[in-house]
Amino acid sequence: MVDGVPAETIARAVGTPAYVYSAAAVRQRYRALADAFSSLSPLICYALKANPNRAVCAVLAKEGAGAEVVSGGELRRALAAGFRAEQIVFSGVGKTPDELSLAVRAGVLALNVESEAELSALARLARRLGRRAAVSIRVNPGVEAGGHRHLATGHGGAKFGVAPAQALMLCRRARREPALELRGLHCHIGSQILSPRPYAKALGVVLGLVERRGGMGVRYEDEPDTGPIRRRLRPGARKAALDCAALARTVVAALRPWPRLRLVLEPGRYLTAEAGLLLTTVLYRKRVGPSRFIVVDAAMNDLARPALYDAYHPVAPARLSDAAEAVVDVVGPVCETGDVLARARRLPWLGAGEILAVLKTGAYGFSMSSQYNSRLRAPEVLVEGGRWRLIRKRETYEDLVRHER
Ligand code: LLP
Image (cartoon, rainbow, N blue to C red; front, side, top):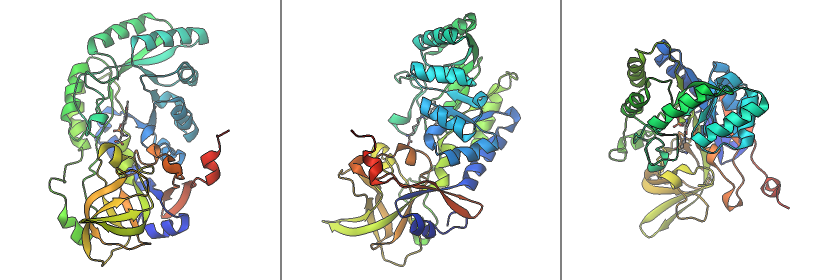
């Protein structure tokens, strides 16, 4: 059930694969975070990259959230979804002249500048437009953090931001430049971080300046309540989620000597990952030597995380099954060995036509999906107030060739 609506009802109506999100779950996460940090009244800027669907964004915009964007496309989406420009921050090491200009003209809260060259380009552009560009300087604090090496952004070898000493230099330059308005410091150390410790470390490196942060982890390794399956978790699978109250305590304490600083948080995954699931239908089951496979109609083009990061997502049948359990790989139809959605899971040995849900896929699920193997991108559904509605339709074969000449 997704907020009272049976997953199978949605699967029957829109077909599979299909993403389904709960508006209530997104709201709940937003409010929990806002509550935990309430003594600092932070601006919570939703990182659109996690799930940029306009209807999902609108849920957060209505809650009063701001947005974090990393491209002109995300900026346009954010504005269209109802986020106010003064609550939008724009990050990224490679903003193009068009993107810089779009952001300056829109009047965003801050462009997070990631190099000296970008600061110069932005100052020139702002002068030409006759506008002041609001900037913050992105600091790379040299902190190792994040769930996978591809998810760490704040270590010295990453392409993001500038070293602390250079950040101070850029701050001074920004203050001297009349076309720029220095608004703060930005810092992002990685994604899928489960402990407050790396944040405290990064905060220690950059304090004395305004700071923003993101990357708060969720607990993926948590089987859904499916009776017997629950007791047979993979060893070591249960990892604590980031406790936002503990993080808030750390940050509140660190910021106590700086009462005039305004905190901007920029979580993506934390707000939407657990609010979404991917519905998929079993096509076949097969055995190859000792291995058992459940072949489903969703694949790595729909959900790239397992193939890309070896990411773990719980999988559960949409209805309780009395089929005998087996240890299986859940695989998709794409022609790659890496097209495995779930590896070595104990699941009922389901037959064709049964529906499975791949859980905690509301962040970096649809947003990273592609048409690889000329597959149509899945539809998205939002459940709100006990009702479901299509918020993006399934692509068609015409969509596949639309732009070809
Ligand atoms: N702010 C900045 C500057 C970022 O680079 C990111 C994520 C965020 C905020 C939001 O991070 P979050 O709260 O969602 O962890 N595709 C990967 C995640 C890549 C995240 C990149 N940056 C995945 O599927 O796990």
